[in-house]
Image 1 (tube, rainbow, N blue to C red):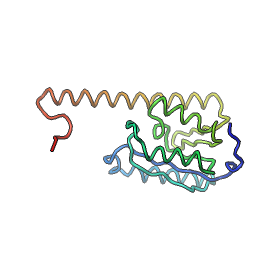
Image 2 (image 1 turned 90 degrees about the vertical axis):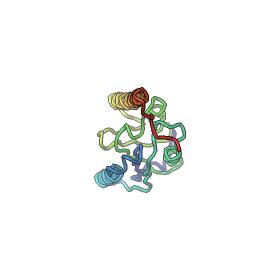
Image 3 (image 1 turned 60 degrees about the vertical axis):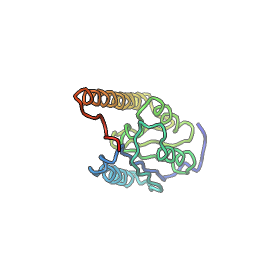
Image 4 (image 1 turned 120 degrees about the vertical axis):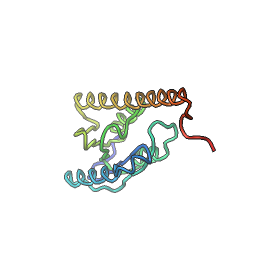
Length: 167
C-alpha cells in the first residue's frame, strides 16, 4: 500500500453516474447525490468533490470516468462514496481497477447502497462480495448488449430499420 498521511482524514469524493439521457428523466442522478450526502452526514465525512455525469460504461472512451479516477489518484480525500458497485464496475478490467485503488492509493470505497466498505485491509468476505457484485454487473452489461443486438436483428427481419433512421 502506498502510504499517504494526507489521506487520514474525513474528506470524501462522491460519484453519481448514469448511463443514458433516458435515465436522467427518472431523477436517478439526484437520488444518488442525496443518498451520498446523507451517507456522508451519517459518517461525518466532508464531500469535497462530486462527480455527477451521464456516461455509458460500455464505451471505450470514458472521459468523465477517467476524470473521476484521476481525482482519486491525485486527491487528498480518503473516502470514495459510490451508490452501488454496478455504478463503478461493468467489466473485469473495472474490477481490477477498483480493487487496486485502496491498495495503491490508501482510499476506502464506500458502496453506500450496497452496505459494502472496501479498503486496503478489507476482510476476505468483503473481497468476495465485491467480486460477486462485479461479476453480476459484468454479466448484466454483456447480457443487455446481446439482447439489444438480437432485438435489432429481429426488427430488421420484420422489415423495419434497426436503430435510428439515417439522415
